[in-house]
Amino acid sequence: MVITMSSQATAYLTGFGRYLPGPPVDNDGIAPRLGGDDRVTDRIRRRVLEENGIRTRHYALDEHGEPTELNEELAVKALRTALDDRGIDAEDLRMLACATTMGDALVPGFGSMVHGRLGGGPMQVLTAQGVCASSLAALDAAAAKIRLGDHPRAAVVGSELPSRSLRQSRFDGASARMDAHFLRWMLSDGAGAVVLEFQPHPTKPSLRLDWVQHVSLAHDHPVVMRSGMEGLDPVVGRTWQDVDIATAAAEGMFVLRQDISVLDALAEAGIRQFEHLVDTGMIDMRRLDHVVCHYSTNRFRDLAFDGIRRRIPTLDTDRWYSNLETRGNTGTASIFIALEEAWHDGRFAPGETVLLAVPESARFSFAFAHLTVVAPPSMQATPTEGS
Image 1: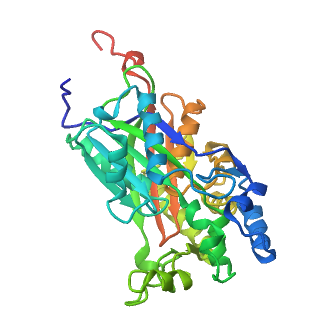
Image 2: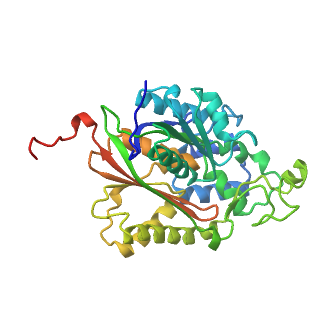
Image 3: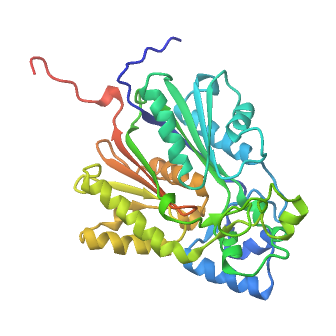
């Protein structure tokens, strides 16, 4: 089938999918999978869980902590769900944009591995490697190619499988400091995906992608979340690639660390970015119907609410949606998993607007996307004759 595209193409989200491996794991089921039931680790775990508010999450690990799936498999299962939701096959795609923090292999790139497992025909492939905000970076790239007229249809997926590196064997010999153990009780596995097209779904509502804004503040902030190096900054000769694997492991270079002392500063920086979008007219608070926000902990949410209320005293927090408490923090997959759930729960109606918001602590970056719900062409009002 030949698809004719306009040079003024707009990007629409027309299919939504997610995949969460295994059964939901409650707080008492974490230690049997990840280990770490000693007194010090148990105290840290209870403190972190009390603050983040997560009640259940998913792991691609069995009850003994053995891996059950690859990250690329999570991504493909989410993609296939999104394709089924749209009613198309992988052969209908012309671009695949994949976001993750850590793929299964160092080489090839994660996007190529996902494409190989997904199948389909020849297509442009992109790997957006980063942390939480990389999923919206991948969405932005795919939307740009559609708007340019290069591709009529693309798929975007964010996928994470950190649980393999959160097991106790990675932490043997590591210090019991909070920065080494904080993310063990924060992160979990999952994937979320969307289908993106130059026209809306022919028979169901779609989400028009109005804009994406992604800004890094790394010029003004040190490294906060890191792995693969000694200390807060990479030094020649002291990264995991400069020493043998055994030395890197013994010195804790493979531990994913987070400086939690900067969370307040991250919240404040995120509020300033949000206010900038309001000040420049990108966001009209009078017409903003929904906010789907990724955050790692309820504490971060509360800081954000307090800060925004200083500027917008009438802030209606019922507009804000998150499934952190039931799905966990799945990093770059979180925003698409939450969007899929909100979409299929029927929270959005044609004409309403939706803001996606993703702060990333790794070195301070923030991503936002503005969407408008549009009815299918068959339901849209047509001008009367003579109007």
